[in-house]
Image (cartoon, rainbow, N blue to C red):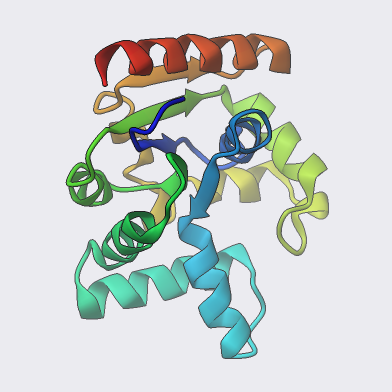
Length: 188
């Protein structure tokens, strides 16, 4: 990594491995990780409301309805522009409008993380990121992909600069990340 700022946006469905990929960039390359959900979690904490996925989805919908579809992406752009880190990873991109806003950042690359439904369900139950995840039924998990905040994610796949197949071992995923970084360094 040199003095150029590289911004990598991560998109993928629930439990696709966005957090794991982001952590790899942080731990191996010292990247700064910025999450869309952090903004929502901070607001919920201030309001003394549970930081559940449902509350984050509702808050996201209300904010976008009242302040514009790309309100959260604009906040992410502002945060990204303020950082001095040369490698920034943006986690949790969910909409085409978000991508349009993030493309205003120089050297922005969208990486889509693809995982089959069964593996995502297993990971979601195992990680217990949100209250109740460990007891979730498959039907409830499938319903989460149909919530308004999740419906555009699949369309980001064709907009992405790079694709990670995260169905295999983590070592395979890490190898794909390294290839992506090689490509980014060639073109930016």
